[in-house]
Length: 395
Ligand SMILES: Cc1cc2nc3c(=O)[nH]c(=O)nc-3n(C[C@H](O)[C@H](O)[C@H](O)COP(=O)(O)OP(=O)(O)OC[C@H]3O[C@@H](n4cnc5c(N)ncnc54)[C@H](O)[C@@H]3O)c2cc1C
Image (tube, rainbow, N blue to C red; front, side, top):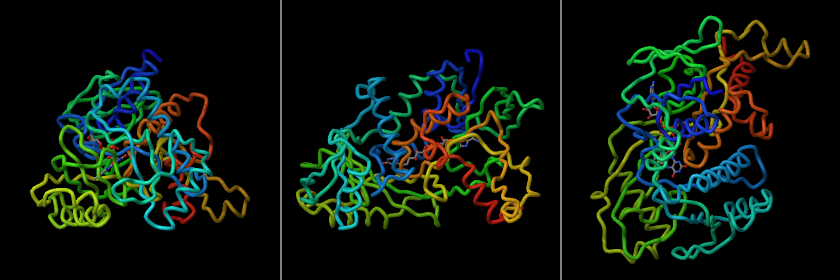
């Protein structure tokens, strides 16, 4: 693999994670980023939280999330990231309704999660039952992205936008057109976040841009020493600041911070954690720093990871109905063999990106598959194509 070259598009947490997976296989990597530096978009919040998403019973989604969390912790350990990325260990997830209590306490059993990873506990400021993740983290996504890039040592081209790409005629190379010139490579990994639709080869994917607002405010005294999730989340202080997040709007996507959302985040915090907020001097939340950024969320809220289907080569003469009649239930999906995508990380990119990147790179390099089949299949972009084919939405 030493003389193979990969181009990674996008220097958010996804692109940085792919760069690390490529580095671990000695593949020369060029990372191109349209902006002037890394982690300027979704991955640019001052503090984010890392913990696994769990469901009452084992599902591909929760198994992937748990495996991602464990993979994150292994990379954290292997590269001694605790010495390099500002962070605080420990996340409380409040179980403030009967349903959440039922879901999470059963999840611990059904997923056989050891108490070193998660256990029932009482969160001290709300006095509410919660799941405590001792290894969960509040951390700086920007520093994490930067550290992954330092470890990966790709050739980075900032202020360079991918405009177009195509496979070479014999299909062995991918030719990328950027606003800084042409780059030829063996593998192309696409991680453009919410700007995916600028790429005509991705426009068919049911991904959505979703607006989110957080606020950063000065460390309060006394304050929570661990992250607390209660629908929204409040982080502990890192470098003198805490973060309160996050709002969610998939319809109105304006870039300007909304004062009413700041107000609502603060009100909700006061309602859910009154014992905490009542100890603070009165605050004017409008004086804090808001930040707006955009998640990319897929139709089923699960990431999109895998080789990219090539729609232009899809045989649409076989309809789903006819294939059923001929008991030939499968659609044959052609791929761009050397082009992969990692997107749709939604609200959990910090937890999921490293493992998703490992899966993507291992797939593109045709390594023996160590990922359980249901998890692997649940991530592939193919799932949307098959759904659209069945509904006859592809013609
Ligand atoms: C408000 C908010 C709060 C969140 N909180 C958390 C949290 O606490 N925990 C958690 O796990 N997750 C959280 N998330 C989700 C997480 O931040 C995202 O899932 C993750 O950052 C997505 O990373 P990404 O690399 O896919 O996208 P991005 O970080 O957006 O990176 C995409 C990059 O691609 C570049 N790009 C796009 N098009 C091109 C092109 N044509 N050529 C070159 N470059 C291009 C962009 O400039 C950008 O830098 C939050 C998200 C939001 C919006």
